[in-house]
Length: 429
Image (cartoon, rainbow, N blue to C red; front, side, top):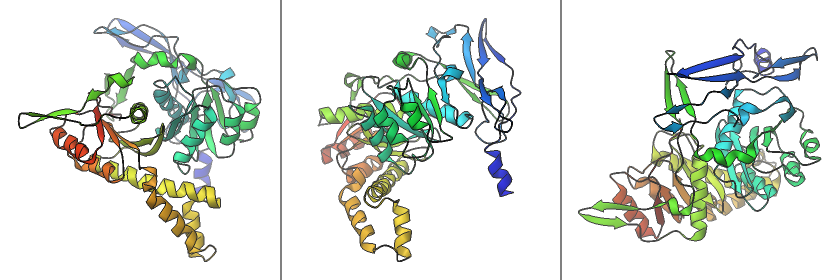
């Protein structure tokens, strides 16, 4: 049974979805064309044409469609028009190395990474995605540094992830990526020799994303977002627009209490403002409820998809501590923290090695000291911000709008922590 299940991951599903799909909105019809690629059959070696390997799980048929015709305008909102494809426009020529044939999750991971990168075109940046959430994201002066920082933000979760960068892949970055196991690498282009470096990983999917140079233009464009229900029904919505694109877009944190205005007393520093802005852009791709910690243009910890806000703030702190300890252990001892603990239990390593890592992690608060805190929705009480304040965060961004805004601002003022509002939330489900 186990062997059969393992085989399922290598099986390419039949695809009975039609080559063309049409969706009508009143008088307007949008036309979509199914995307397929030429590939060698894994059994016979013969060339065949095929779309997605399978859906979210083996056993689910799936198809990728590109918008090719129709211009939709509803209530004055102009939706994305044909000819601006990114992931849906990947052609045979852009499949630089297939590895295994791509499945739905591979491409949605790349797409959600682009949801972050479209807001930060100015500097080299790297995002590592895992199960449609970023495990690490960073921007830096060089692409290699951005990737390195994104990787070490959570080296454990980066295993088997999708690496997406916003600059042409260079050798320094490719050599780093090739040292670890990832399933997908996507970039706007690849410098000479980089594909050969990456192709050393047999099953790696190497993708060139067309039109990524125009990615920033999609930051102000809406698409139609579909959510299918288990009864066959569909909920349709406009995709969100991120209104926070520059420092000036942040709002002062203010609230009323007893007829008086309560205002955040300290303004963020330049570095804090950069981290708040970067964190808010990363937040656009994180499942809600979520809380992030960011420092020096790199994620420290990402708490995603929880039911309560104080809980996700605590989970992100736990992740920061555990990932910090794991990173130190990998760099100093060439193994994960869990592997070290097991070796100590077996008497193969001295306990002092773990004790030293634990102490270094405690002293650094898991790297949280001096970080900023990012929340995708308002704090319903001060307990959420208190979690971050105890760990040494120096600035917080949140939408505002809670009945508890005054007490949340007062908690920040008492701790000397800066706070700004966005005036919009960033739920993603």
